[in-house]
Amino acid sequence: MSRLARRWLKAIAYPVCTLAVALALYQLWFIAQILYWRDNNVGETRFMELRLEAMREKQPGARLQQQWVDYPRISVHLKRAIIAAEDAKFLDHEGFDWEGIQRAMERNQRRGQYVAGGSTISQQLAKNLFLSGERSVLRKMQEAIITGQLEWLLSKRRIFEIYLNVAEWGEGVFGAEAAARHYFGVSAAMLNPEQAARLAAMLPRPRYYDRHRDSPYLVQYSTTIRSRMEYVQIP
Image (cartoon, rainbow, N blue to C red; front, side, top):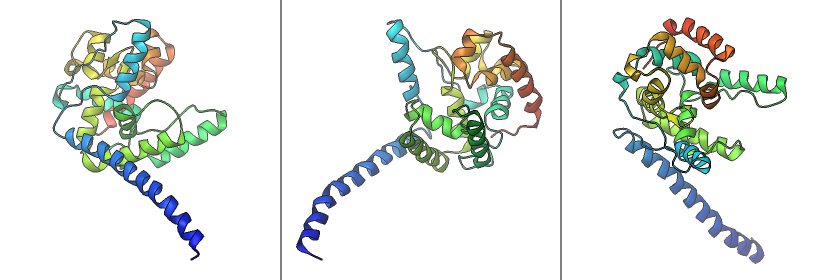
């Protein structure tokens, strides 16, 4: 190897190694957070922070509605409805529904625009906990890494429990307890099948359906989810 080549390798070795160490530490931070959440409840997620910032630009005193409730205190109907609507293979996959992703890509290609993402509950949770809503290759790569970490470090039940408590359900409304009280005036434990199906149907566009609660599509989709709920298995 020539002296020039050795100098060139030496010049790039330090920044490359520094970048590799920084990336490793960055991923270890995610792992440490997830390990903490094995036995401790999640407070404010990154997505909640971003939504609150946006709300306070219009209303400085805005606050989020969110209250953690443990898994047994959430209606089994809501659990069934969400899996029926969002991720029917939740108990079977390891974070990614490859068939669902393929179907979403085909729909997007036919429409000529992004209309469906095929994200699993684990992927949605990864995004909500740590990431922004931007659509970029780097963000999707980080989402995939965090999804793998969640599936590796947490049980399906714990992943679902956290999801139920941090999912967005309206303007400043997060989690099953806040959603149940916001829309129906009951606790998450008391949701009946019809109410559960309605909440599950809202998940793809929660802020829109918070403003358009009588949407014909929402009514129709709720009925479809209700018909699927009895066949669903939950963790």
